[in-house]
Length: 167
Image (cartoon, rainbow, N blue to C red; front, side, top):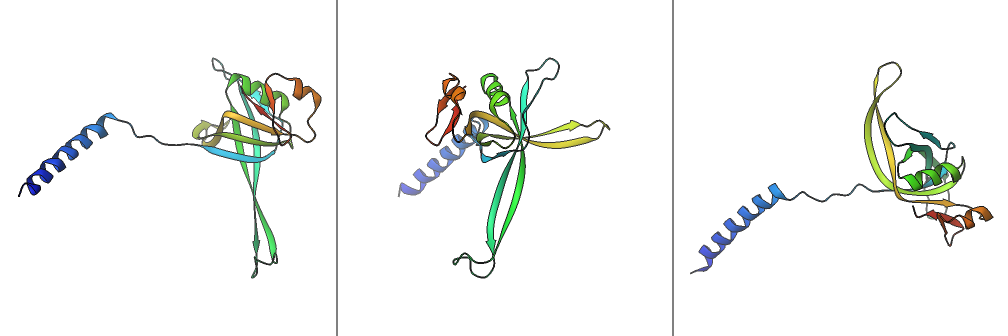
């Protein structure tokens, strides 16, 4: 007997509260990228007037797969696709370490976020650019680890022979 009116009041209350909550609370989201690959060019440090410097380099990641009838028996052709990513490092400590130690051909792991932007090229044409903004983690994988990196206080030894920047 009381069940239907109670449910109606409850639904009205929930609907009203959800409308209020949706207008006041921002929804959480996630923009996170993890890349493991090889550096395509030595890092470049750039500074635009009035802004902080940024270290920029390219990173290649590869996808490999087998094509053919029998993938379970390791037969068929191996296909590979290389994707190039533009990495930008803005954090002061991480930016300097990346500029000093990352070299062309280095194998690195980067955590960051995707950023889509626009710029105007030399011919006044608007272009779109996708950039990975490096976050707090940049691991340089080196075999064998050189002595100067072990002594550098900015770096902590990693069990795989790499070095992780803690900047």
